[in-house]
Length: 381
Figure (tube, one colour):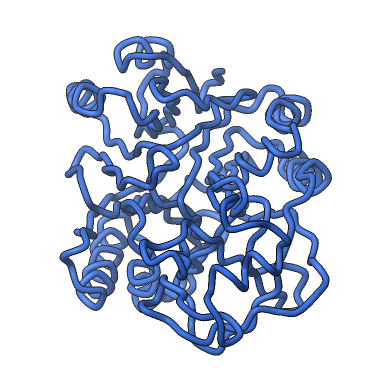
């Protein structure tokens, strides 16, 4: 899909996709691709263009009005220089060997450096024109990266997600024109005065009745060993009414943990997998001992997403970028809504170029969240 400012395309090779984008004078590219795509050829092909880019591998991607859940296809977006007054990119090492404090410090410094390059005042950013997009490495917690950004620029609005491949949870590289691998990349953007953006999140759950789950033992910030004084796995299975043999990505997508802070938004902490001990649960996000979680069931996403898309439509958007949890994709499988939700984007935003990727945790304005779609839409004032 194309307009004069933003274009999107999908295909099975980088050359095919670049040719189909066809946008004159692109400022930068976003690329998302399946777990069996040729990462090296994609990266090499993009570097030859001389255009800045950022992207990652995922387990499913949105391109305009269709979800691609195969492992080989590529989805891409090109954004024109006509949109931006300034932009800058910085990377941060995020491998498992890097200490959390180091990630946080480097993230803060990276944001400061990028802001200086593109003329954004982090103490007083323009709330309509200045924003950041993050793409973060693998399954390592994004909390440290986002904490660093909050230290450097608490008022700056940001959006993004963490990379991942198949639901076997093998970590996957982030790619960019600067560096690729186990990195986080932040793109900092200042729109021209005639353009603005909106940023938000949407999720769809209902609370299950019964006893809440209190975290009583942790092995690490993302490894729950004890719930209500018993095995984490046993208590979770009892709460959702399944046998432990049914544990897996689909069950974790259907039944998640969350906290309702009373503002109408549920703070979700999704489960990634059972740990090797057979009694613990690994989560996508950090948890704290003593936290009391409610169990939530994923429900139809249509009503919530329709409201969200109608809000975007009212702004006459020229482009839409989505960071949609892979567990949202899996929940749609249970509800037989994969094609229904994809078509909803086409029904409400038929002429708006759209791209997105299936994340292994989403972020928005410094918060690392799960089983949610976070997004940014650019529109002309």
